[in-house]
Image 1 (cartoon, rainbow, N blue to C red):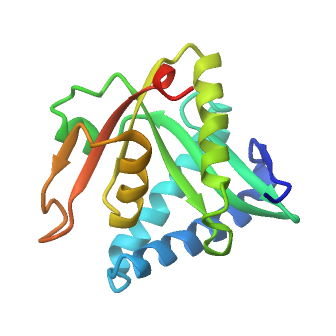
Image 2: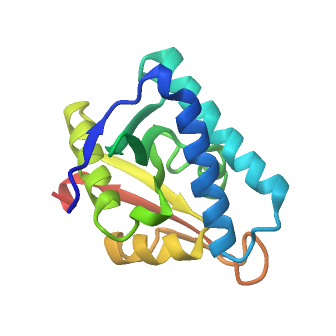
Length: 180
């Protein structure tokens, strides 16, 4: 595998991170066959930008990002923070006390070489060091759902056709000790 550095983002990398989010989110929507949903793409990009600002302003207390760095550029990201409103609503608040791991993105040209797995492993360690034993994760992207199902098994919540016919949403509750 490539020489990848996993670390906290720096405030001076904000614009580069914004560009990274735009690139991976547009690519994801396109590969999912929903690249024409411009408002949804903008909303997704905007939410990731807000998460990043929350990380910087709270010094990692409200949101906590890690990035993968290679050859002088950001090639991956992951973060955790409070469970989203979507997760709380769809689980009827069953997961509202759990942190949510999300923003697991890897540049298209760096996918399928283990960077996502590396980011996850660093996040598991981070969560454990903070005394967190469980987290939740969700996905409305079919490609990502296949990866998560392979890694975590069947979701705890399957919301059939949540995003329209054939577009499900899945939510997992994960115990870190089961992963390490």
